[in-house]
Length: 280
Figure 1: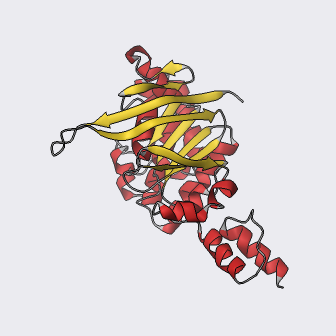
Figure 2: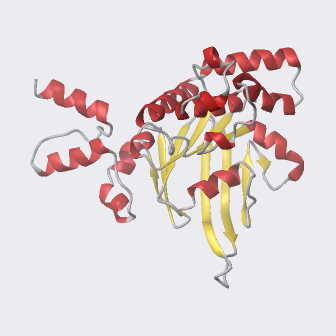
Figure 3: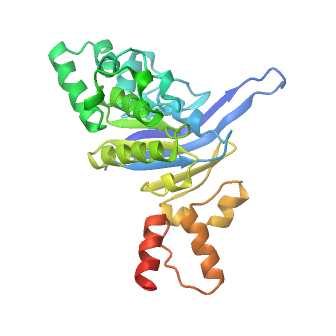
């Protein structure tokens, strides 16, 4: 499987008025993302995960090191639009991405700016709205939608640009549990359809759904691996003031009471199924 994103010795620093020395938000990070994969990046506030996402999308440029998106260097200004078409980005607050007064016009905005032919824009808008289960709302005003629906429209707007990779920067942070469920369902479907997913989140149960988890702290990558491998190191995760998925914490407490719980169980659905079958 080819690498769609390659990050080499990335450093990103900025100056603060109250400090003489620049602050390193990203400190010598090396990451490769395989095409078609689903990767979650977790970390507390200030760990550098959102700054990393913006470097991938060329919203920020490296202080040193390099970021490549399908072989294109994000520092190359002539490749900026090509990079953003390959790797689309969805932000935390959907209101910041919605620009039109009609849902379908909003989804059409990106392809129109790319110079896509009107007939193809129509096809893309319809397909994107179907993909996020929002076709029936296409004539509505975005401000009449729920938070989860708005975020799905924001995702549809990115899908309409036909990216190979979607970077989602805490897309469920401002949503209620139902809205979170809706958006995660769409994210998992997009991954099944072959789109590379890079999910920045502070919800551990969302990270547990990924194929690979990267843990950041103080601008560095401190842990990475499959969800099972990463969440098996619950004490290390807690040491940097992060939680673990509820099922992982419950399994940890049950094992202390000499109750056997398989190591691969890291989400609530698996835990419920296991307990229901084991103790029925």
